[in-house]
Length: 435
Image 1 (cartoon, rainbow, N blue to C red):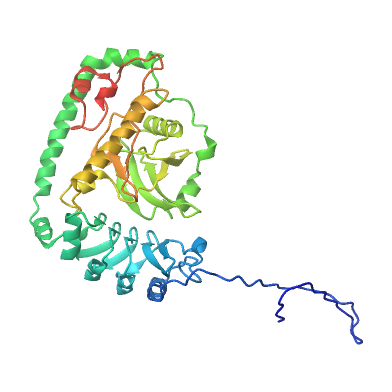
Image 2 (cartoon, helix red, strand yellow):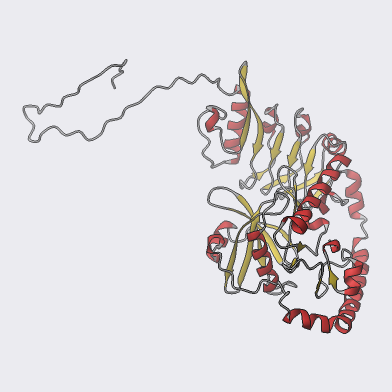
């Protein structure tokens, strides 16, 4: 090795006396020393993140300094930079990283953490109390694991007073508090659900009979009408199309279930670039069908708004139909309005979510070239992303109004019992007010 201070240099190669071949240069390596003016990451944070990496066997390209240079910060980390001090780690995202075992105490050594996301892994055991000792922690996502027991009292209290955004959905054995665990054991949910189900069956039967006798002529006329804006033409947007084999790869053979609905099952997935997605596959026994699948694809390919879920792509291969959406890390609004979630939303958060959902609806009604009515607005169709931003979802039942400015269309009643507009239910006439 030769250290060169600078300037111009000439190199010559000569054949030696006993050589039978002329000089041959196989390779040359040149290194340029770059002086990094940025400070190294806080040593305590370096030690903690190194222990986390080794314990969980994280396979990401975590090499060198975690926070420096600033343009090459480790994947999943966010750091805070102060010219007068070393960089510190303030955010750690290990979602969908195949973590197993318990939540290790080394995480507590990242004293400046503001956000911690351990969702969609296989972590087990209890939620450790040391997480409540992180003074700056504002968001903690533990959803989609196998955690059990109760939430530490301090964490639960912080989630109740609004100082901590806590997500624990998808952990069947985890209770928000000891009181809720006792309630769980004494639950009378089954008879209540049975009663509600019987009532809904009765209501649905009455609705079907009513619609058959009062709306049949209107429906027949509507099907033949030019104002029928259901999207029947073949799907031809190849740019957004995924093959079924690609869907299997994205979901790792449908490994992790996020939820189930009338359309089918929703799975967690990851694209080649690491982007997380939700994959909704149409079930052969789905109460919705190919018509709704077409409608949702066509609508989302033409409609884009910050408060509407984004369609990443779709699969339309023989009997395999699926929709690929952006991943909404904090699930749906219903989870945060039920007794099963410890995170009570404060008034300001509730108002913001309501406003964002309304902005999505307003865009459908007035911002599109063709007016669109959602027809199924409910808390399970209002999703929350990693920034807790609300977005409307599930457009399979949506209807597009005629381009001639008509204010209503005749249509078969569709939607969720309990959320249907009574006037629409009685008259079969759909307007933007129905939402």
